Length: 399
Ligand SMILES: Cc1ncc(COP(=O)(O)O)c(C=O)c1O
Image (tube, rainbow, N blue to C red):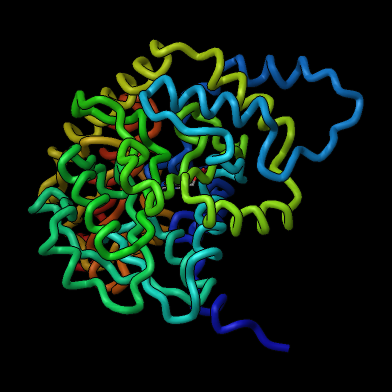
């Protein structure tokens, strides 16, 4: 028996692969603080649980393949309230943004096809693309230029006859970059001119610190055939376990192809759609503002704490709740093993995500980590302090 070359081109998630070592550290009695995973500690709104507990059907039946009508309607109204009119036919309910990404990649990629992705990028993109036989062609960005990628000079030389799509995260994970309206317009123009899909992963839409109006690539009606939006309730409502996302596009042909996979996997979880619809319908703008302000406090705490560690380099994020940080160490994966296996301060240690998985050439990320600031400012500050102490101990041990 053998495995497909496609799956063998995929890697375990760099975010989750240290889990067994974390368990061992906890068994030794250590408290492990997390800067590694995008699991917010903000409470999931009560309306989710209330709606689920009021569910009165006597059979928990399959939902329709494209999604429950009330979920599609609630999503449509949410977009309308932001000024982006779409219809329910433009939305497919998915198992989180993750399934939406898998579906679109399965629909558009053949063996050898390429997807342009600004680098560093969300590591699971590699899995979703490689498993179809496609591959990522990175659009390199740097902290020095603010991780900006939306220029013709950076993108057009990378387009060739294998290019099928551009995939971008806006606001960005792991860089925190938020595109300006002009940059978004340019991305739409490039996609149109080169007949590419523009897959815009907007799962962090509300978490922007620039004061700009909330945006979506759906604003560009002239690029309706090109634009595919990936969305999710995971981060917006701090409901990652709800597993409800959406694939959104006005490209009818794409949606018809995607429907084949939606029907094949039958449906997404009925109760989760009940709760997700209630959150869209009942939460007021003040909810989104309070969540954003809480993340802003966390962002400010992480930036202040990092600034105290000698030799670190980073760019303050404009959105989402992550940042890439260059550390004064030789290898951040070795540092992570050290933090879990050999280091502690007052019975505590810390986890980060080594940077190699965020680059198509792992060597580019070897001295970098991604930090997720998803806990309260005091906890974030202590976790960064542990990271600073851990770096000192790691380098002292090696000297
Ligand atoms: C950029 C990005 N896209 C998509 C996802 C998928 O999230 P979910 O499947 O929970 O919606 C994540 C999760 O961390 C993410 O960071």
